[in-house]
Amino acid sequence: MKEQFVAYIRELQNTITAKVEECDGKATFRQDEWARKEGGGGRTRVIENGNVFEKGGVNISEVHGKLPESMQTYFGVEDADFFACGLSLVLHPKNPFVPTVHANWRYFELYGPSGNVAAQWFGGGQDLTPYYLFEEDAKHFHSVCKSACDAHNPEFYPKYKNQCDEYFYNTHRKEGRGIGGLFFDRLAVSDAMQMSDWFHFVTDVGDSFLDAYIPIVEKRKDLAFSEAHRTWQEIRRGRYVEFNLVHDKGTLFGLKTDGRIESILMSLPPHVQWVYNHIPDAESEEEKLINILQHPRNWV
Amino acid sequence: MKEQFVAYIRELQNTITAKVEECDGKATFRQDEWARKEGGGGRTRVIENGNVFEKGGVNISEVHGKLPESMQTYFGVEDADFFACGLSLVLHPKNPFVPTVHANWRYFELYGPSGNVAAQWFGGGQDLTPYYLFEEDAKHFHSVCKSACDAHNPEFYPKYKNQCDEYFYNTHRKEGRGIGGLFFDRLAVSDAMQMSDWFHFVTDVGDSFLDAYIPIVEKRKDLAFSEAHRTWQEIRRGRYVEFNLVHDKGTLFGLKTDGRIESILMSLPPHVQWVYNHIPDAESEEEKLINILQHPRNWV
Image 1: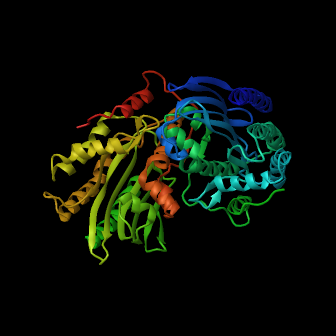
Image 2: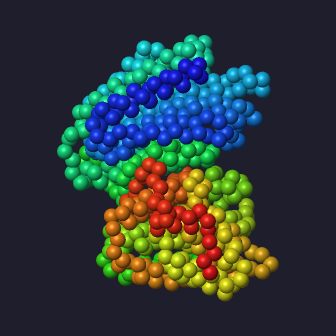
Image 3: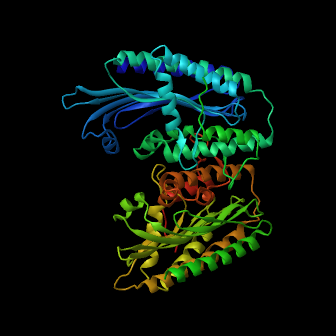
């Protein structure tokens, strides 16, 4: 399963970065390969200052070794070896009418004293963070998510859609980071699902990513925008930073366990503003977005 | 002591905001008074888009009630009433040659079952975050800090200077947030110091703030700067955000206990950038700053 999923994310990184470059038409990804001294490493690909994408990263990593102490508490185990691999991506477009997107697909193994696989699971998802809301875009993104799920189990989409709304929530702002998508974790063997079933599910979601996102980019990337639209985008990007640095378990885990900082923080937007007590005008498009972030909706 | 310190910070807020406005010459502070439903409230004063100060806040608050659960663990007590008051300030200048400054002076009381004061202490300090380092400015700031300390005990300055370097440290970047100053916490009754002695110490530090900072602003605020200087300032401001959102106990405590978000997050800079893997040129002024942040120095 390890080898199979590593091969999958390597290939998916190629597919996604190729498509993103094609869509951008100007910038290309730079690649940084890095090694982790305790075992493993990664291949970080970052794009900056494109026609369409102001900043983004599509990173894979594959790490193993002794489970760090901070992770022991989190997983409720003592001394153990682990293996983890995954693809993480964030794309911050320049045009405020194009949403930011985040996705992650990962696989984890924990070993027993004799080197046996004591536990294994998949996790991940994909979610959208618009600055201006086009309902048809939200419906499109969620429809693709739902189709990927429904092929496996009709209960998956509602469940992982709700988990996404719950996870990507800025409790201190009382609003969602974005309009959600899918979020799942600890997908392990059950009566209904073997690991190979979960592999097919997670890779189907991964394969759906470009279909979910790129048509939205194509539709909005050439819309004219003003300085005011851009300011709003930069203020909202501040909320993205707040979520990632205050609440996101993955980011904090990486920062506190000596992960490769630049690969982790590639998720942070390029230009960001914090304005004291900014409140959008009544009935504005900006206020409409806030209302939706405060009250997650069913899009399909 | 409560009344005495509350009166002090109210007056100090007036003194500091008046001087900052005078130094700015254009913008004035807007004031927001707020109440906390569990008891107490605050007076937030924010300045934005000035000649000199791009954004800043000088806030006082005075809160009381049942100790929130998250604070119980932190203080190692169970059900208890508390009182806390303090002044917190952050000033982000526009000119990259003028450092950002932060200061805080606070007083805390914890009550026993019969309403008796079971514990009480002062905390706080002041610290400087330059984007370009002028050694004479660092020396000036630390000299004023040292004088305020030396009047009470020659051991205070080295002790609180070191605590400041340790506290304002971005572990994930392996560098200080800035070039430090003073940081002290849990200043409680001891053989040598009564609470009234600590009151005099903390208020002497508070009184030294304008002398420590304003002369630096006056000296640097009219220096010409380029777009490249400004970009560097915005990238470094990103590190400021990272410290405040990932590591600062006060900020995280406020965010997780339903404090007034806009008063807490006024500390975040107005315009910020994150650039992937930004590394300053060898021998540049930017690299010189990083070296100093990685190896805290004695300035006096």
